[in-house]
Image (cartoon, rainbow, N blue to C red; front, side):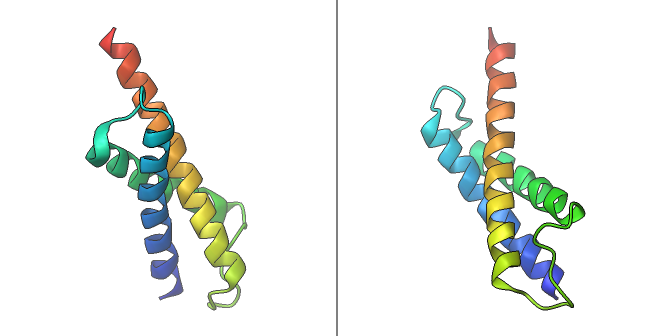
Length: 95
């Protein structure tokens, strides 16, 4: 159950990170839906990458504040990063 909660946190944080990156870099923005979708995917990937590195993994099946914060940060950064990458690729292909 702990893993599901962490994944949900990562996906929601990714969507928020993708939309925040879209607001911060409007030239790379994919629109609200595109930013959210890229952010959700990036949030899942970013959070899982941190988990593989052992950062923010739940200790003994319990959710700790550290693991929640790591999931939020990993998801948000991953979501924003993937949205920016996809936006940059889309902009480059559009020329």
